[in-house]
Image 1 (cartoon, one colour):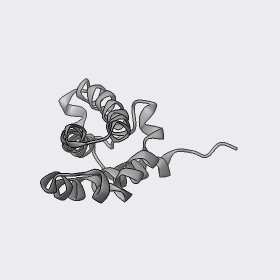
Image 2 (cartoon, helix red, strand yellow):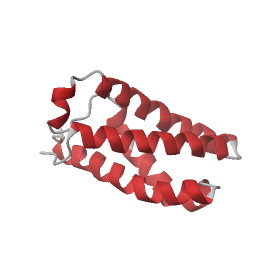
Image 3 (cartoon, rainbow, N blue to C red):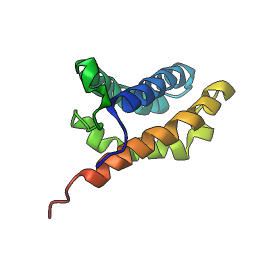
Length: 118
């Protein structure tokens, strides 16, 4: 079971989403913009669904709501791996270093809770 609450996940995802938006506008290549936009749209859908929950539910353990979040982990890990080359602005890079590790931990907790089907 995940140790992350809905409130914690929502806060991390919103911070990550803001940084992704900055990175998108700072990116110089169409390929980078496309990759960032894909991640942005997946997180936007998840955030929108989490925001529909009652405030009283925010203390419950976080569980992925949208299907795209189940498939975004490799993309976020790739962004983490290549953030030095991808993120142009120093402030965005430094902030991303702080936030992306939290997001990856939350997503991997969810992946560990998902049953493997053979």
